[in-house]
Length: 348
Image (cartoon, rainbow, N blue to C red; front, side, top):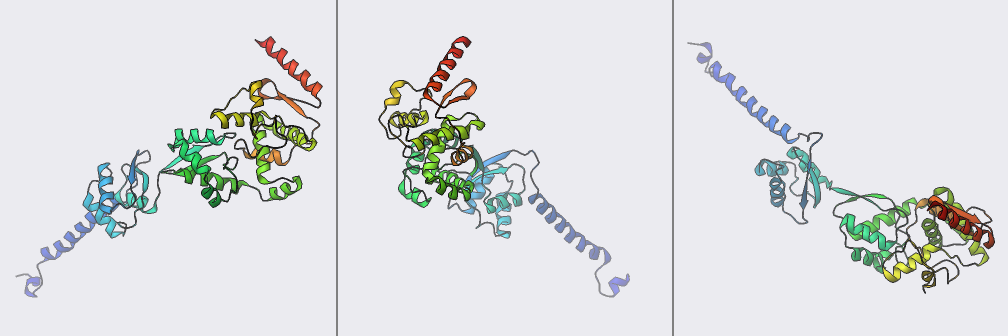
């Protein structure tokens, strides 16, 4: 008889098997957890999954499973309960990586790292044009954006005591969480305008004797005229000179805006009859600045309006490649127009 048996201990083979079995269970559990924590491959495609507000975690699990992102609904729910994640998943639209472990997926859903969209608003767009672009790129109905931008309650909430948000929607590239609403977009654009507004500009406004809306109105005219950055301050200087002398601004962007308000369409090339349109925005008929901005000016045009060049010019006309010829007198201006016409005729 063996000594272990004499002492009442279990035989050696049984003693060895127990820890070996326990170690196997731990190894399996460890392997499962490692798989759950596995990051997706670097080039893994994403799958768009929508989690509606108020969804139960069972519904969340079903949705993730239906997109082929998990192999076991039961294991996903058990892991979520283990991490207390079954009550903290946030609603939203997600781009979940294919091939990621359940732990990684739960991290994304708990943190609310929803899918985003990149949206660029170019300089010089009117509110009507912005609404059309938003409809095409973000699938927000055009009329919805226009209505929200003109809604007094929303403007008050955004701190804008103006008829519309025209001019206060900063042209910029925005990274927006999905889904994007009209209110969220407008709030982001106004917030970016405020973030980029230099507090030192307030003192400059006082020295110019202008309100912020008046400044943005002048900047929007500069934006509508300028095609080259090095001409922005000169164009601003011309209009500043006209304002000081009490001359009509005769700015084409204001007429384009008036025509667009009346017809819904923006004309790139104005006719003489368009200059007679009756509108407070028509600076060929009404002196001073129009009631508000005629587009959304960029920072460079705002800075040009704040610091217009000290120039003797009162006139300018578009020439080749978007440049302008500036003149001191009407006689010089008419000569410049004739010279440009002759040059155009020779190039045909």
